[in-house]
Image (cartoon, rainbow over all chains, first blue to last red; front, side):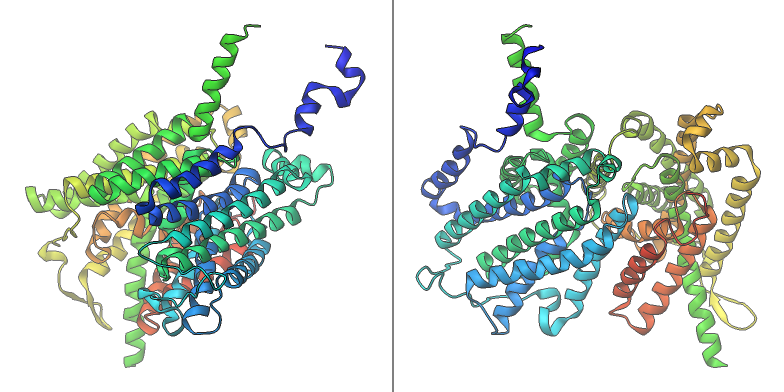
Length: 338
Length: 291
């Protein structure tokens, strides 16, 4: 193995590193499947919309948790801020054009993310965990108390959402528009996240996750990087929340609670975090299970979910994709014995 | 003078609640301080203990105090099994895995209790001795609250003595401050942890039983009060008995007073205060100077 070392740029590892951002052959399959779903299950598009929103939300968490390694329990705070931004603006008659209100949701969530990130990311470990939990509880309590503006415990129902681009109606009973709309937003956001992850910025986030001390030593502005990442992630979570409010035409306290924060964490870990497609796999697995089991046997579902979490934490720390990768590696090792 | 009596009785109520908070949270603080293990299932152990205590009283007619002891022993024994078989595998794992694992345990506990016992609230029937009012000289006060305060004081004194004056207490303090050094000196940290974990879970069970009268006892208990236990531990500091005691009293009294004067915004205030306190002293309000 001396020859490749003569030109470091031609070393196999360097080549793999330089080409890692190029699209893989299998990547379009995900999006083709999403389109197939639209035609194959016209009666389950409401479920499909919810699934796509969960994927987007889990992707935003992946950026923070999977790539930057920030363990937060309060990510639903930004989802809720986005949902309430859309909901309150529409309900009180200020603004309800879908695409621009989505951008407003992203901006407000990003501001909340920036503000709380500047404060929270000074700490780490248990303190960070507690602070993120308390921030979310604070927002939930505020939404509960600000009855006049947020609708309190009941939330804001029947939001007047106008036609998308003045053409396509949001029909809550037959959510075709919602599905395509959410799928489009998800695709654009995914391209953005993919670019961020493979950029030098994304690489430095991984560096911070792996060894913060060393990143400080090489002169990387660790705090600024983390806060930037937190803000971007908050904006995307806000978009997911805004989409949720538009697709359902209501907002309530469930968008802000610990249940949603725990759910997105489970989805991401189930799929495999720090892998981008983990959010897709996890959301599909979780939502399909929840869809069929949770309504029939809610208690047994909770028991099973708990068991699943314990098993993942003990044996499959990289989720479903991690198991897949391990199997693939074993399979390849068998075929090409060294 | 009426106002003075009013304030005194309100503070007494808060102190009684704070004592229960302390009894539940102290084990969490010590085990987190020892191993750095984020145990979100601590509330589940408190709930388990509460159920053992209340059900053994209601169905077998066990008197209150023996029932408390029984709950302590059962929960401690169960927690040792969990600690040795499951928790021990995750000591070197990342925080995230510990969080997931313990949340999973909480979900499983809630679901199993709902399936086996039912979702309704379990009523704690106090013995006649502890019902009614007692004359404190300046005011009449609920006997049970006075009993709670007395029990809490006895427990904190006992724990403080055990922590400061016994060999095991010294070993715990040494390990919290510097685990590697403690191990190098020949302290068996794993055995120490198993002991404290069992004892802490037993204390949580006691707290679950003692607090069932005013906190209620239903399957959601494990999740409902978890944030409170965590706030007490985070504000009090990891592995500090006295810090947790002060923090529990502070949160207990604040919660009680705020619920009376601003019934709606009280919780908001506590969350806000916790955030500010943790930003000011990330290691906890009462943490010592050691890292």
